[in-house]
Image (cartoon, rainbow, N blue to C red; front, side, top):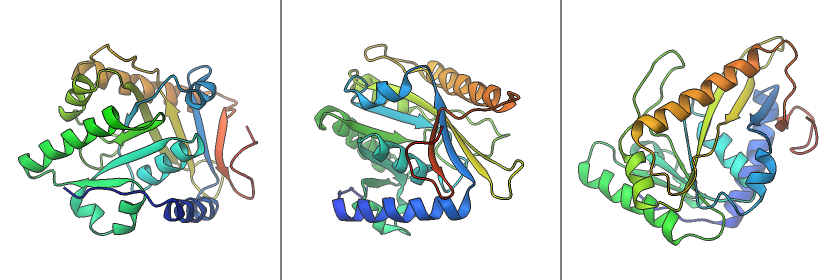
Length: 232
């Protein structure tokens, strides 16, 4: 396993880099979700938090880094070790690597994830992609059982399903849509089926939002020539 560390100046450097890259690559990065989600994330109620979702593109971890940083979370992200080895800078930004081909390494990674939730600070957040690999929108891949085990070993953690979609519309640049699903409350010990259903409901909510005639973003994380906060 490749353990993480956190360097404040490297995180600040990555955040500044991403603000510029978003404006170059996307027309907008929008976030929507259940009623009151912004106040909920800003409070202390959800923490420790397990943010889990689909893994469709290389951008997912960077988008989640920006979102969690925007709300002052102390995030840690699990990544496949061979991918992290190509981008060692991310280790200093709270990313730890697990060799998914090794049963021993998967076990160590699971225990490390549980320690993050059990021993972390007041706003600790674990980001995990339980499908285990990049999965296209049209492919239905079951979640790995490690996610269920994390909730059993860290029953005080809240679960937050997230679905992301990058799509082209009426603008030259693609748009990013992020949907936050209904939280899974602490102590509920969700099964793998429960977790899969919550993620699918989040996907359906995002599709419904995109199919509305007049889509109004609840929260804009980034937009060309606009600040991170303010425009909705």
